[in-house]
Every structure is written in C-alpha cells, then in structure tokens.
Length: 314
Image (cartoon, rainbow, N blue to C red; front, top):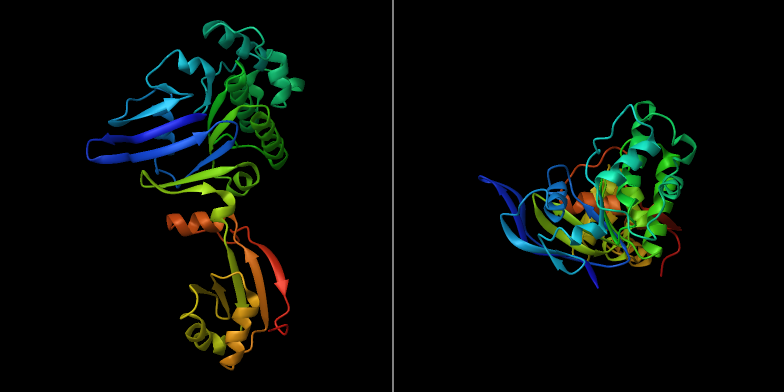
C-alpha cells in the first residue's frame, strides 16, 4: 500500500515555480527522506499534502485517499515548522489542550504521558514551554504529531536545534515508528542522520525531482588514488578513457569505480605509481552535493574508507 502518491503535483506563485510536476510514490511502513537545498520545494510539497495550500496542478493521495479529504487527514500527523504552543503552559498541558481542540482521540490512541515518554520529555513535562530549549520544543512538536497514533507522519526539519544526544534519540524513535507500522516522511538538512535512518530518499532541486531510490543505489563506490603532485595530470590522462573522475587537491583523484586494483594497474602500466589506493563508499552527503550542485562545507562527506595497499596490484 502507498502512504503518499503524487502525480504531476505543481505549485506556482505567479512566474515563480515552487514545485514542478512532481511524481512520487511512498510505500507504507518505511522512513522516507525528502531532501533538497533551501528553496527546493520540500516544505511547499508538504503543505500541499496537508491541505494548507492548494496545488496549481496535479493530484495527490494520502493513504489511498484523493486530496482534499479532511477525513483522511485524521490519520496523519504532521510537524511543519514550529507549532504555535502556549509558552506559559507546561508541555503536558499543551498536549492536553490540543487534544481537546482537535478531533477526538480514538480508543487505543497513545496516551499523552506515553507520547511524552516516547519523545524524551517525560521528566520535564510539567515545566513551562517557555523554559524549553529549541531542541525540546522540537520534541514537543513531534509529540503533537504522534498524539493520535497516526499511520503517516510528515516531519519538516524535525532535528533543528537538537543536540547530538537528542538526534540519536530521535533516530531511534523514528526507526521504531516505522518498525511498528507508521510511515515517516521527513525532510532534513542532517544528511548524515538521514543516511542512518531512511529506507529510501527523494532529492529535489528547484522544485523538480532529481533522483529517487534506495540509499544503497545512491551511495556508489569510488577509488581515491593519491599520487605525486607532479604526476596528477598524467594520471588523469591515463584514467579518463576508462572511468569518470575528478581531482581533489594537488595529488588525489576520485575515480568512479569500485576496483582499486584496476586503477592501480592502469597507472602502473603508464609509469605512474600511486602512494595509496583507497576504496570508499560515498555517503549520502557526497551524493546530495553531486546531484544538487551544492557546495559542501569543509569536511563534509561521509565516505567510509576501506584502504587497499597500493603495492598490491594484479
């Protein structure tokens, strides 16, 4: 069963295109990453799915219900930006008030105390919201989204303001939701964390879908070859006819290939000897920057290196 389906979903503001002809299918019971640079259309898409704004064109379904369908939204939890919580109320009281103002809680719905436990706020549930840190407010917003035990949860940048411990707890919470039958559709700039928790991802750029698929399909193998600075140009000439590659600094090349022995052999036949050959699996951050054309921050990238001795050739 599909939790989300979009066909030609589009949103335009005059001449500006926020979302452009989006086709997307999200299967149930998984964690699905919805990624893209700022302004790529992620939040606009989520707002259309939740009926907060009307699409200019196209159609969308949530849990098999064609939108707009207010009854279908009763099965959906959402965290879009930060909710308007009353700062003078406690976290627990905030949830109690929201429970009264929204649709009735159905039998078997997770109790408020249990939801606070789930998001790690049980020990501070009776403190006023105005004393909460940004990360704690994010967790309270997640509690709001989970309060009615939804079958589908849409989360927009849910890890903003969380410290490393909070992010780790969030990762565990999200994974357990999917394992218990809840579909989680989330956007995030925490690409390393998305890599740990998501089953599939979609990447948007300028409102258009760039790529969609399993994480393992996006994270390809590359070979890092380190040569003497004076040999880099010749190494490129030797390898470019066989592989896609790019230089990295004055002495390294990244080769789109998972066979370090083959790279080493070609270099050796041409009289260029590598100081080191290293096979790496590119991380989600590397794939994201390549697909979107964004410039990574210094030190970005999550390759997991497996070092192969450069002298060990075929």
